[in-house]
Length: 138
Image 1 (tube, rainbow, N blue to C red):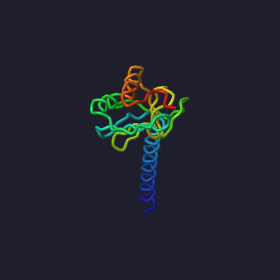
Image 2 (image 1 turned 60 degrees about the vertical axis):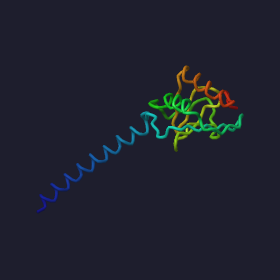
Image 3 (image 1 turned 120 degrees about the vertical axis):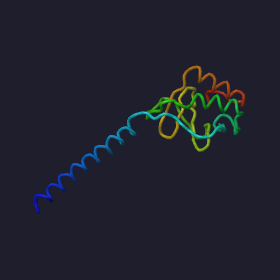
Image 4 (image 1 turned 180 degrees about the vertical axis):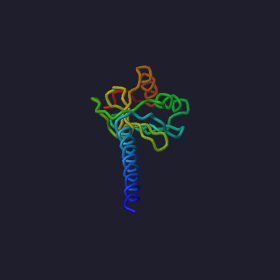
């Protein structure tokens, strides 16, 4: 009887070690590696309240343009040099994208950041100008 118990105990310990290893790998993956930006919603809302007082629903064309800029970008944990203010953002549904204030081209989503290409940044600034705003936002 003692031998059977040891056999089951060893199997249980091996299973526990495997489960712990899988959980550790998933945790480290989520913590260290980038995520890709995805979100739901087609209608973008622009809120800028530091330098400007803008609260607008963007046109369909502008919403699609910004969505194409943001979707598929890799976002990282980071400590960017540019400042962020939670009163300057674009939303798609429940997803908030906080704009870098000084025109650094970085976007914050949650506690992660991604960088726009120069062309995307210029396009975003062009869109902001339609709504009487532009970078820098402070």
